[in-house]
Every structure is written in C-alpha cells, then in structure tokens.
Length: 267
Image (cartoon, rainbow, N blue to C red; front, side):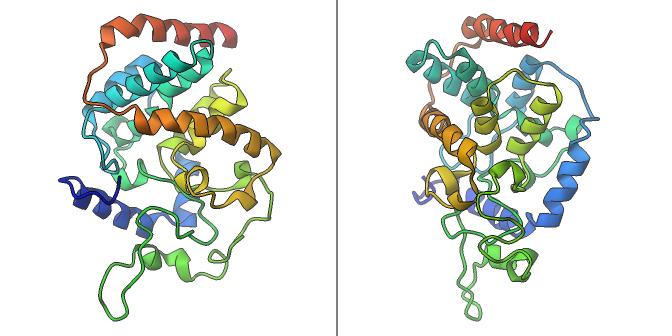
C-alpha cells in the first residue's frame, strides 16, 4: 500500500522520483547491452538466494525484511496452493534473483536501476504507474516523469512511441531492473522453464499492466495467455509477505532438488 502513512513512505516515494527521472529509452538500451554480456560473476541459484540476504528493497512500502525471506514466502505459498506445479514453485523462488545487481560483484547498481515497478520505455508513461506525479504549475513541486528527458521527446511520448500495436512485449524495452536482467540470464543459460515462467520473471513488476490493464495494446496472443499465469503468481508475490519467518533449513532440500531437476533437463 503506497498511500498508508509509514516510516517507509518517504523512502519509497524518493526512490520512485529518482527512478522515473532516470529510466530513459537510451539508458535501458545501454544497460541491456552491458549486462546482456553476462560477463561478471558465475554462481549457483542458492548462492544468489543467500547473497540477497544483504539487501532490503527500497521500493517496497510493506516490508523491510531481507530478500531471501520474500523469495521463500512466495515460493512456499505457491507450493501450498499449487502442489503439482513445481515449475511455478521454482519461479517463485528465483523471480527476484536479479536483485543481485545491487551487489558489488554485479556492478553495485543503485536501487532505482534494480528494483521497483517497471514500465515500457520508448512510449508515453501511463498515469497508472505508481508515483507518476505531475503538478508543478510554477512550482507547487512534484513532477517526476515530467522530468524524464523522454517525456518531451516526440519519438517517445506518444501512445505507441517506437512500437506498433500488437507487436508483443518481447519487442518492447522495459525500464531496466532485476526482472529483465534475470530474464537475460535465464535465456542465455537455456532454461527449461516454460514460457509462462519466463514471462513471470520478466514482467512480475509490470503492475501498470497486470493491475491497471495499461499497455495491453502492445501484447500479442502469447502474452495474453501468459498473463493468466502472471496474475496467479502476482497474488503470492504481493500477499505472501509476512513477519513470520520461513525455516530455511527445513525447505532448502526441496528447492535444491528442484534446481537439480532443471539442471538434469538441461543436460
């Protein structure tokens, strides 16, 4: 909840102010080119999970727990309700692993370039995007997206911008962050996750789409099918958050077995 008064509210709003000003089309292209090389570090999935213990997501208004707690809470809640969909359990576990971009080994990117809601770059910023803002009128302040260089660029500020209707989200550049980075990692490593799993990884922070229905005109038929699974996943990503800790050592063998299962499929 972004509107409830809390100790985290100002931190979250400041995060989105910086995010909305700096996530330009050119910045996204540059990040994808640089990080698409996957030339920094090689480590296991579980090592990544443990690495995330060092970070708290500044864009999250609800929790200030270490990230591994969120991963396991999400995965365990899915496992309880969908016991036979092990690919979805694994997707729950790994969906936020791209946040390792915050770590010095991966470039130590600032939080605004790693976490938070994502949205298309290269076309108009929809008003449903969290903390969109505006105002000013000499100067009662806020603004945010209005301060982004793309906001007044005629190549990028129309409904379609550089895209065509129905082009498919795969052809859309999203604001840079952990979602797209982990998607690039998964694709490069020839993951055996189904299309819906990859879609969840890449777009789970695209709330303007799956919460407000914005940008649907960019989707193709495969996107529409995969969105059904994303909406299922989203309930667990958002509403499994709890102060009740998961017993990591108790559940770890199950998730290690899932990781091994994926490796065997790859081999």
